[in-house]
Length: 316
Image (cartoon, rainbow, N blue to C red; front, side, top):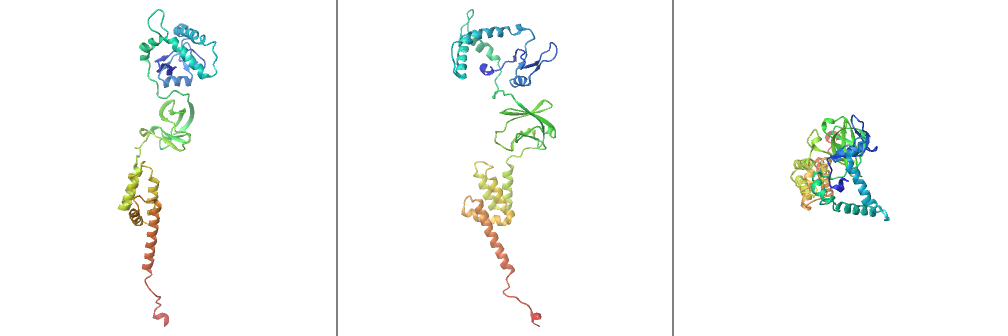
């Protein structure tokens, strides 16, 4: 109905249908079905059931229902439809003809009255249509200000760390509730993604670290030496996505732990002379060769003597 009108009204006056209205006493609070109430809250429209045995509260609707039955149902009663799509198409056409039909005792039609007088009072529709939601209860907020739900993590305000919250979700959105009050909302993670994260920075007790990993790795390369810095800088500068070369960069910097920082610096210098953008294997092989040469020179340095001198006392 809302999509047909292209907007939502301020209030909806409905029947006391059992599937929508749980309780409607003469005095006291009206209790609506949770899903029906959630629909009203989502579209920001008040659902106000008509009074018990008060048909005059929506007399115009009752009259219109009879006229629609005559204009649409009676008109199509002799036609045969082989699919739901063809039936709906015929109903839309009959309704449009009914609404466009001129009034008998005044100017205009139902369509012109709606477009010129009533439509301006409607509120805009949300971007995503309402869906009946499901609930999941008892999720504890971790120290990182996130909850785990359906193999993913969703942030909530940090003041709720350690509390247990409930989750209302559908195929598009995830809402987090504490004591029946909504405290956070996120777009749901796509299916198939494991350990995905949805984070709102304002929820965190500390500022979110952005692109710091790349900066930290570049700083670490700068400490090793100018050639290591130049190699890492090129990798990040020429990457279309900043985070793409991070795994390779971490592996290259780890060569300094396997051998020595000066070995990595020399390997980077040698590799940069051969290639503009050397691969990890190239740098590692160069470091391995340089380390082997260094160990060989150290061995020669400690074994300069050409013979074994036992001394005079040995032959005495």
